[in-house]
Length: 299
Image 1 (cartoon, one colour):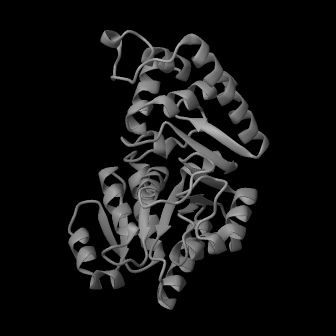
Image 2 (spheres, helix red, strand yellow):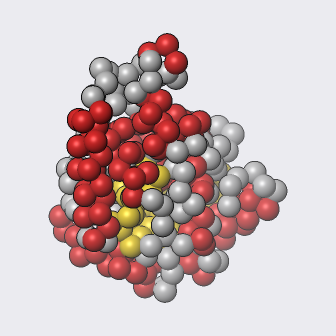
């Protein structure tokens, strides 16, 4: 288990900073520790990697660290692990992408095998055929010993999580709120079950509510955690379309079912390198296994 002061320093660094969290992931990795990164931020301006707001004095900093230590301890007592980008149990696939967050919170337990993961995503307003397809894909992935990653939304996401659990497999929910929240509220029971049996992951403070900005950020983390993204059913305005774009930026393959090519955006995406059109779940795993065996992706 990492030292408490490392995580407390990370909380203080992120709460006192003024720039995107991705910049802090880079700073922390360059510094080699979160304590060192916090010290770098408090160094003379000419020696800093990034500009920062006015420094807190030593007394104020000590008080902030004490409060952060108490928070971290409280989160752990409530079953929420803070995992920094320097920790061994930070998701390895996520560590490899350019927009990785400096921390994630985990409810439940990530295991080594979760690196062998495929994201299954799609619209909240799914058709019966879409739900059936999501269940079939999730069940097939479990049979092939993949972890099913999805976003715990209504529709396709819920169907994929539920099917993975029903098949006795692993599923990881990447959510757009803090771990203390459930969105949509009707998925609170499913979220609790996934945390008890597998893992729920969030890059947001535990009390954070849903927001328009948080869900695209969630999609980026979901793509980063997975070796590939399967978009089962989605409209042009769906967050799943955004995740497909992000996955290609991450160098991860995207899979679209033939039926989705009725959508203009899907036909356009299908012409891009890294996008694969499939007609059966077996085509997904065959392609992912071929790509990962060639060391094209982190696994």
